[in-house]
Length: 423
Image 1 (cartoon, rainbow, N blue to C red):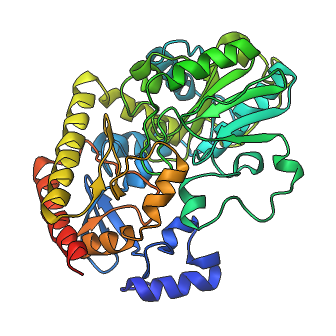
Image 2: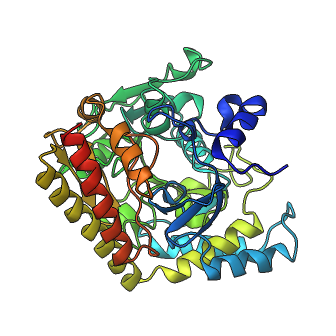
């Protein structure tokens, strides 16, 4: 059965899928209305089942850095699939992807491939506890590290978009060893702490950059306490620049978490660190971690195809596109008399309504509580521009977005901002 409307497909979905979606933010709960169902995508665009085309800034929440259905990625996946989709055995392509990952990031010597960013963060924390023999984990309010129990406390992004601070079903015991601190403030770290896990650029509570000296001070504090520093670079890894946040800020953690970009749009994640730390993993060490689909040949083929396109010139183009968008949005809001700030970190763009540039989760939430994002989102969608259906997400321009796409986006934003100013 083929549905030709988004509404009828959503009605069918709600009968067999909780809330009609397989990830909560897709339900449009925080922006209102029914979700659109994507029928196909190419480059900067997605088309829904009704034939509407949107300039897409979701880009699978940052996974599609080249844009949708890039020819080299499609060819790589097709070629891999023709040989078999999964083996449960080692392959050359997973070795090659691991080599590519470690070559790009200073201090990264070994990686273990997994199937999602959640798996990467969960496994990194387990490894940190195993290596240090300690239990406590420090995280930051508004940083999202996937949906494993111990890391959901005060998570941003999808959790915050649902109006939740955590999740029912997570026991008190599961978070008993999790300490939550405000972002951009260095917490007290003592010899009970196994690791501090942080988004080096917070991209799950809108876009909140680290204040000057924050990451360096975290590194110093962890060194002093012999705790491990974990960078969750599921979003920033291989997107900010070739070496990710480490390359941009010059701070090396002990463990990295990766995802999104490295799979070229297929399910993949990775965590890694020095050879000494990674030797704690089975089969070398006592910390167990496994996955039937880890190192999947389709995902590794796609990841290799993407990384092959990401040279210095590509990052330059991507940042230039993001700058065009960010500067244009600032101009649009100013002209309309709408108070808004548009932060930018390299190729990442954020949007906060109000006059405050947030430095932490509380300030980001204050912006969201103004309630303007939903109206802006719907107005942009009506003009053919698809943003993420939640105010805590960032905007992901891709290498497929042209200057004409950005200009069309800014024209749509001018209409939407004018409507906000004069409801």
